[in-house]
Image (tube, rainbow, N blue to C red):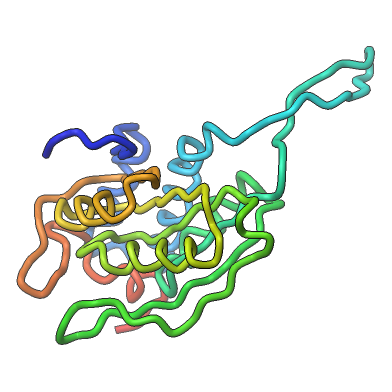
Length: 212
C-alpha cells in the first residue's frame, strides 16, 4: 500500500507483540480488555507527541524554574461506541485531565453502513485536541461518519486511532478526511465478504465485553 500523508502505522515491538496476543482466539475477555487498554496507552504516547506546551514557573526543592506543561483547553477523547470504550482508560492513564465524549454508531447488517444513535461531546469542542478511538477500522464508514459529526459540532484538530485497520477502510478515511492524522497499530490484508478484517481478531466489541 502506498504511503499516505497523515497516516502512521506503528512498528514498535511492544505494540506488535500485544496485537498478536489480541488476535489469538484463545485470549479471554479479561486479558483481551487489558491488552486493548495497554495498546491504546502505547499508541497514545505517539499520537499525542505534538500536544502544545507552554512554559510555567515551578518551585523545585532547589530553585524556581520555567518548565513546559500541556497548554490550552483539556483534550477530548471520543470513543466510537461500543468497542471504542475499551481504549479510553489507556489514553486517560496518559492524560487524566482529558474530557471524554461519546459517539454511538452501529453497522447495518445488510448494507454494512454506519447508523448514528448517540453523540455527546465536551465543550468547547472547537478548542480541544480531539482523539477519536475505535479498535477496528474496517470499511471506514463509522470512523468517517464520526469525524464528520465532530466537524459539524465545530471540532477542528482531530486525530483518529485504531488498533487494526483494513486497507479499504484506511483509504476511505484518509480520502474523506485528509486533514485528520490517523494512527494504526497494524494494517491487515483485506476485508472479507462480510466486511470483517482479515486476519483481524473477530468482533472487538464482543471480545472486550464478553458478548456474542
